[in-house]
Amino acid sequence: MMIQTIKTTPYGDQKPGTSGLRKRVTVYQQPHYVENYLQAIFDSLEGFDGQTLVIGGDGRFYNDVAIQTAIRMAAANGFGRVLVGQGGLLSTPAASHVIRHHKAYGGLVLSASHNPGGPDGDFGIKYNIGNGGPAPERITDAAYERTKVIDTYKTIDAPDVALDQIGTQHSGEMVVEVIDPVADYAALMETLFDFDAIRALFASGFRMTFDAMNAITGPYAHAILEDKLGAPKGTVKNGTPLPDFGQGHPDPNLVYCKDMFDLMMTPDGPDFGAASDGDGDRNLIIGKNRFVTPSDSLALLAANAHLAPGYKSGIAGIARSMPTSAAADRVADKLGIEMHETPTGWKFFGNLLDAGRVTICGEESAGTGSDHVREKDGLWAVLLWLNIVAVRKQGVDEIVREHWATFGRNYYTRHDYEEVDATIAGKLVDDLRAQLPSLPGKNFGEDLQVAYADDFKYLDPVDGSTSAKQGVRIGFTDGSRIVLRLSGTGTVGATLRLYLERYEAADGRHDLETQTALEPLIGLSEQLAGIKQRTGRKDPSVIT
Ligand code: VG1
Ligand code: CO
Image (cartoon, rainbow, N blue to C red):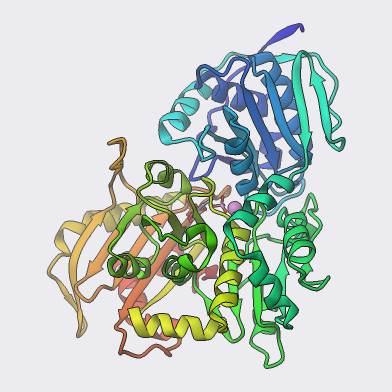
């Protein structure tokens, strides 16, 4: 096998964000752009000689090109074997499972998640470590430093691998195994959930609609929901992964799944609606007449997880990202288990999961998951919901209302301002940060008194590492919160995310319209941060 060492020059913009390196496809198509980044990752790792690397992506445009490049470079860099999903496909949670199940050294997940795909869309590369989870900052920081000085990369002169052909092939001397992307994952789901109970639910006439958004979950949902669980054919919509996601925006929220939301609010609509994102790690849950916020969903799943076989002996603890509502904290409190608040991004859950300190994790951005893999997992959340509905023999709305009546309700919303001028956005956050020391103790309106105001800093209780400047949070004495941070996944300008939360006790009012319930906090955040005034925007781009 002739290893080629190719000369290259650094790009200055290969700093990974919240979840890998996401850029426009046109950026990735620059000469050696993919190669530089992959070599920088390999250069930041040790001891993988002869080991296994998993490769898979969400099927978006440029996946095939990047995968062939990655296979040749893996061979040249000394990996012994590559496992790749057929057609280059692996959902993010399935990739995580394949890494763990086959004891791989690590994996490359090629995705820009919910960002649009196609020649004018986005592409992304993320490296996952041997526990199946996103590389910690120690590795992503090292890779970034390496991209700044990289001058050569290694590859081999070998033909493309036939990605459609399941079985063993070679790239140079390295073994390449093309695997069924669904099989391992579907088998894992079967060990966690009561498939008989869910089968009986569908057999009794329970109607569900699942939108795969022309993205990666189509094959998984067809195989699990329709083939294994007996949901009628047609339950899964948009179930074939397309390179441009059918020109859609594969983000399962109330904007891009508005049609499903409207359907779920009609009297003769289905009993259960769900969707997942481009790479299959997010979930949207809508019951008949009831949208479940991701923060509530985390709390509900944690409170009811013991109804599923995989969690029947209870959960060790819960972790949530800082901007996620504190609904789950109340569940942890009642169960007497550990509760952790981490920075945004799944990579911060890895240590807690590995140490067995938490079992269930979640983010307000529609991500929930457990210790079964080290990524958030869209279909897992859907199946756990179905399992709970099947066992409790209640509808989603009823389950949610009972939860609020027990724990109280955390009214919650996120306002995103997308593609804002980066300088304006940066200054806005800086100015708010500067106000923080003066806020504690201050009163706003009748009942808002600031209890604390800080820039969130995380101390990892497992390895002692710290991550600073993770978002501004202003907490009030009644449990309300205002959180502001800049997105780390956007590819154009800056995205400001404003998160608002208000707690209403178990015997309080649970039927207010969310934006109305949060009106005072929305007004106060504008007074403090001036997003509309400084950006000239009248309204948020997206409200979730
Ligand atoms: C967003 C979400 C975050 C999530 C990340 C990756 O990050 O807020 O909760 O972990 O996307 O999810 P940011 O930095 O833009 O706020 V995914 O489904 O895009 O892999
Ligand atoms: Co995703």
